Amino acid sequence: MGDTPARPPDPALIYSNVGELRAHLAPPKASRGEGAGRSLSQPSQEPLPPPLPKKQLQRAESLPEQGPSHHCQGDPTPRAGSVLYSVPPSHLRHGEGAPSSTPPRDRPSCGPKKPLTKSRSLGEAWSSPQKGPSPSLRELTFGTADGELGQLLHSPAGVCGVLLGCQAATLARLSARIQEELVGLEEQQQLLEAELVGKRWGALRILEPEPCCESGDAWYFRVGFTFGHSQLELAAKVPKPCCSSLGVQSSLGPHCSIQRLLCRFTDRLPRELLLPGNPEEQSQSPSRQEPACPATHPVLQVLICAEVPHQTLADFVKGSQELHRTSPGHYERLGCLLLLQLCLGLEHLQGQKVGQGDLSPEKLLLVQCPCPPGSQRGKKEPLGLSLPRLLISSFFRAKEKRRPCSTSQEQDWAKGLAAPTTPAADELMLGRLIYQILHVDISLEDALGFRSNRLPEIPSLSIYSAGLRRLATLLLHRDPSRRASVPQARSILQVLLWGPRQELFARSRKTLPLLQSWVEVKRALLLLRFAENSAGAGGRAGLEEWLCCQYFQEVTEHTLYQVTQDLYDAP
Image 1 (tube, rainbow, N blue to C red):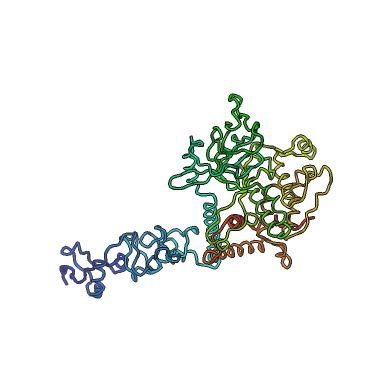
Image 2 (cartoon, rainbow, N blue to C red; image 1 turned 30 degrees about the vertical axis):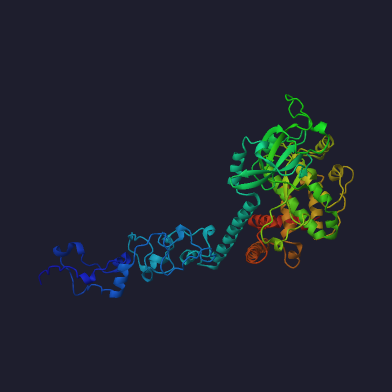
């Protein structure tokens, strides 16, 4: 039988929107571009595929091409402000490389068509793990496409890993968000610093003529400053004579427990500001080149700080004796939280090779945290009951330091200095501070054991008393090499505040798997509490929640094993 000339394709068989996948799966047939010059080899054995129904043809032809920013038909329409139907990131939307949970034959096109690079079966095309990289756990949300989640759910171990990873990522985001509410955005702080460059008293509004706080080394005045469309409240710090600390403080990185210095200048003190004390002493000039000014208009160095303190730690301890007596559990928990903030600040300084060296309560500032809407049922807590931010503000004694390696060296250092300046000083002063917060008198000689081998007794008034007593003993150990460090003290305080408590090991032997399970369960319960508070009347998270987030974000079962051994397994 001779060659039959090829006939042109039937117009009814031309489909404008048949996908490339169907073209790859269909048997080979004559190309439309070669019509008259070729013949069909076996027309009886390879029939052409039947045409699609007319209705589908009209729908395909009328469907407009959608860009990658449009949502697909059949997907839930995002609602403004909805938690459940938030628009996923651009790299997770359909039509931009992310696999879809619905096969392509059953859903309309959601983006520009891309030619297939090679032929593959229908199952291989949509179930192969090589389709794309697995999504990052930090990017998973409730609105993440099922096709993305499917790559992570092949085994129970994979599901567990997804949940734990999402918990850690969520805690990190919550911690960053709460810190932003507490101290503000770093970019905004830097812009404010730039705006204050060259400014003096004339650019500030004096809000109160008397100091809002007097520490051991400075007076603080409340001042206002216009920044853009905002009215900010700042603190003007006027250092006392011989107490300047600019050389160290201006070089410190930002931290929640370190006083933030925005700018500094030297100028005459305005008439309306009143400095307590002897006016003749106030008139002393900080510079030898400048003559002394009249007592009413002294030239003083002024530091503008971001935080406005309302009292020192010494004021707080002095005014809370009645609270300690009537509510020992609440007060000692506040004490643990204040000591924890101090440890975090000291760790930040030690990381920059700087030791504070003077942790007297008179030089530690307390700043009232902003009251978030809805907290405490809309009522503002009294200052004695609320948790303030603790700030390290005195750096004039700070310097790089070396740890004494023997008791004799430490004794010589302690006799020669009223305030220690060596690296062991942080631990010693921290241990002494525990006694002061708990209203137990202790001198530096008693803390070092030079007068007696026994430390003063701390009464057991709450569930925190025994742990604070144990921590003070570790910090004031007579052998410097066996003394607890600041990071160890921070970990012990975290365990005292949020567990695990000793009762966890009453029925179960302490093991790494037990501690790991405890951490994982507590992380999940912490996130559930955040969710419940956000939906109810609990209000937004504050300083204590931020500290708790930091703990469960970083803690491991190995750290807990050592810390609980130091805290609960005392010899």
